[in-house]
Structures are given as C-alpha cells and as structure tokens.
Image (cartoon, rainbow, N blue to C red; front, side):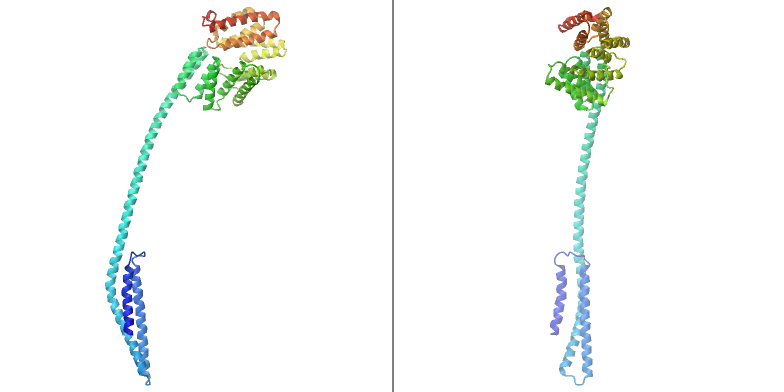
Length: 442
C-alpha cells in the first residue's frame, strides 16, 4: 500500500511538467517554475506530517507495555512512509535540477517566437507607414501641382479682368461722344476678356437701351443682376427698359404688368441708393416720375420729379418735366415760370458741356413754351448737331414732349411747335433712310 502511494505521487509529478508544456502557454514563462515549487512544498509538508505520526506511534508503543503487534506494525508502516516521502523529496530535488533547464529552454523558445512575431508586426507596420507616407507625398505633390495651375489661371484671369476694366472708361467716353456703336464694340471687347463682370453687362444694357435695342438691353441687365443681385444701377436700368417696353404696348393688362415690373425695379434701386444717377448724370427718380405720368398718377409723378430735382438741382431735366405736369393740372402760370428756370439751367449745362444733347432739347422746349421762336430755331440746329445718330429715341422722345406742350397752349402758340415737330420728323426719316443729315453737321 505504501509503495502504491509513493508510486502514484511520483507519476503525478512527472506528468505535470509534460502537461504544462502542451501547446503555447497563454501565461508568462515565469508561471511554470512557481507551480512546481508549490507542489514540492506540499509534498514536503505531507512527509513531515507522516514523520510526526510515525514518531508519535513509536512513543506510544514504547510507553505502553500492553501494546499489540498491530499497533507496532502501524507505527512501522507510518515510519516507513515518512522515510519513503523524504526519499521521494530528495529524488524530486534532483528531478527539478533536470526539469528547470528544460523549462527555461521551452520559455526561451516561446520568447523567441514572440520576439519573432513582434519583429514581423513591426516590419509590417513600417511597410504600412511607408506606403501611407508615399501616398500622402503623392497627394501633396498633386495638390501642389493643382495649386500652381490654379494660381496660374487666377493670375491670367486677374490680368484679363484688369485689362477689361481699363476698357470701361474708354467705352464711357465713346458713349458721351454720342458714338454708341463704338461704345458697344469696346464693351463687348471687355466682356470677352471678363464675362463675369456685372459692370460691363450693365454698360452694354444701358447703351443698348439708348439705341432702342430693348431685348438685348434686357438680356445684359438681367445677366448683370444674376452676377450681382444688389447692383442698384442695373436694377434701375432694367426698370427703365421695362418702362420703354410698356410705352410701345397698347393700354391693357399686359402693359400694366410690365409697368408694375418697372416700378418694382426703380423702387428697389432707389431704396438702396436714393441719389442713384444714370450714365447721363440724371437721377433715376426722373424715370420713375415718367412712369407715374404715363399711368396718369400726376401727383406721384410730381413728387418723383421734385425728388429728382433735389438730387440734381442744376439739371434742367426734372424741372422741364415738372413744368408740363403743372400744365396737366391746369396751372399754366406755374408752367411758364418753371420754363424760365429751365432755360437758365439748360444754358448753364451747355456752358459746362458744349455737346450736351439733353440740355439743348430742354432749352428748345422752354423757348417754344415762352414764345421765343427765333431763339428756338437756333437751338433746334444744335439739337440736330448733338443728337446721337445711333439713337433715334432721343429725337422721338423730344417729339413726344413737344406734342404734350402743344396740347396746353393756345392755338396761336401751337403752330411754331407743330412746325418744329415736322422738322424733327424729317430728320428722323432721312436718318432711317440712310441719307446724309446736313443739318446735323452745321
């Protein structure tokens, strides 16, 4: 029995290290020796306990004279078990001396594999890092190239835009010199250089309006507002185009609609800039007043022209229109007094700008209204000389004003006005036929 116990303990100790080596341990290498030491300590304790029991049995056997053979035999067996346990312990000490190097080798192998795996992971990580670095470097190169291309394009655009802007004053001077076609050509050249400039579209729209090409004017002014929705000058100019379009329509719903569109654009522009002026130096309040007059809203028209007079107090334009509005209300005396002021203002404008067509037109009307027929005839010559050939609207609008004046004068006062209208219509017909206008070159 004792031998069986000892044999079992020995086999248990031999099997345990082998089981500990199966597979790759998930615990650190230092755990295996610790378990073995703990088991040896347990065996030592058991051996000591067996020795103590053997000594106790021997003492009891010696002290008791009446001890039996069974007790003695039991004591002997206990003592033998203790001696066997101590022998086993000594054997295990030698076995540990053999097993520990083996465990160290196993631990070293495991550590080597872990080190090798760590090196592999590090190599893969470095490869990924280098790959990402190369990718980022390529992206940076692409971004740098794209930035250089964008910078080049931006510089080219800036250069073209600068050149386009330099052409605008040239076109403005051509327009003021009554060279409408030359101004259009210059503005179109500027547009080719920079198609996204709202100011260029505005100027094209304005000149096209004065030339009577209202659809082209609408196109460019609308584009100007697409580029800059708050461009007040384009808003007012588009309102004027709508008003001119409405003037050509028969009275009715369609004309009312387009007049409403004109009023909306005028008011929107003047709300932003109350002292806004057109390219001829006149306040846009005057064009709004003209719209109200066409609608028969005389009082509103008067207020608009009065506002116009506060913006341009040295211009004859608003006061010439106020004179006729007073006449429409039956205030003939106020009309005549106002025309005296118009004559003075128009003469002052002509002194400042010798080729100011609109000043000559107001001067002509004021002199006819005052019965200054000879002076009016001399002024008519200057009207023909300064009226733009490319803009028939300038003369047709003058005819309209004279017809309104004739309706408020006496029959004797009307005839010189009708004669003047006939001369103007003759010049218009000659221009439309392509004939040379000798009166315009005097």
